[in-house]
Image (cartoon, rainbow, N blue to C red; front, side, top):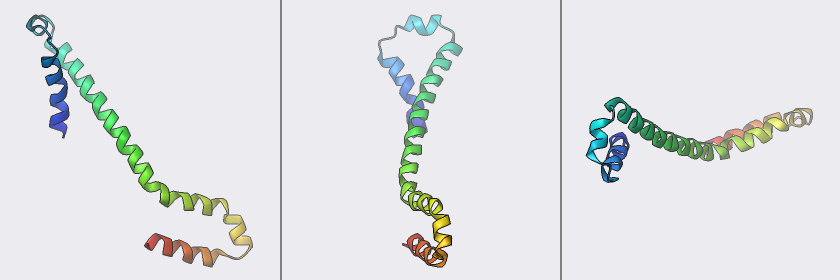
Amino acid sequence: MYAQLSQEPLMSAMNTGTPLSFFTSVNVGITTKKLNQTAATSCLCISDQMRKLDLDHKQPLFTPLIEWFSGLVTIRVLGWALEFTEQSKSSMES
């Protein structure tokens, strides 16, 4: 996958009709830096998408936990701690 990402900017530069004189007159370091920035941008987009998918995947786990923490005082006052602990364990196992 990384090889495909790193080839994408190069192939794009070659297929845009960029004249050969550009590659012979512009410093190789500048061209490499520009290609590297393009690849980094592609990687950042993929990284952001992966982070969003990870959060979406974890959301069913964290939502009940947040609700449980917000009601912790009520659970303790009413003596429901054992019941909620057992319920939480069974939820985690399924």
